[in-house]
Length: 248
Image (tube, rainbow, N blue to C red; front, side):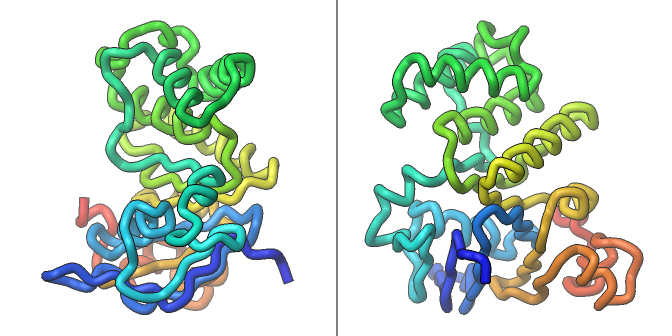
């Protein structure tokens, strides 16, 4: 059996007005590219926030590489990189300055920061704009820089929450290639996306959640075959009763 990077057991998160995650149990193997799909409000972001130590679960446990996300929060944060939906950049710093700032927060040395920054800027197609103030970046450029910031410290696990939103097709495919490259290096990736073709192209396995519950789990091919449909988008519509894009 493959070694697990993430183990979630009976995870529940209740807010005053709703239960965002309900009795979620899931394992993700080391080196796996796992897609977590569901409509807006289904519980995806809440689950990721718990795994990243940003919020506490009401009950249940979650471990990353054997470390409890609550009890061993500092160690977990050293292992993960997070690209959230909101662009986490400082608008009056340049692209290079943003990367240097994040690298310093991870106590990286200057040489490594420079090498990683140059590589990431090249991969994200931002080399020509590296010394521009990021307030002047387009939405797609900000998303690409956010992805670079999440990976500056070369984390073992990357949580990518809608990483290609606002990107043109060329940029999206460049990011797909980069994500695939990270997987070949043994990185574990958790991906959320509203683009079904993106999930089909990238993910080893997919979990679909709705109303905080896991309602389907398997490879894209398995889910398509089991539900007797043509593609992953039809799987989603059949299981949740609505089109992913209707929720945007």
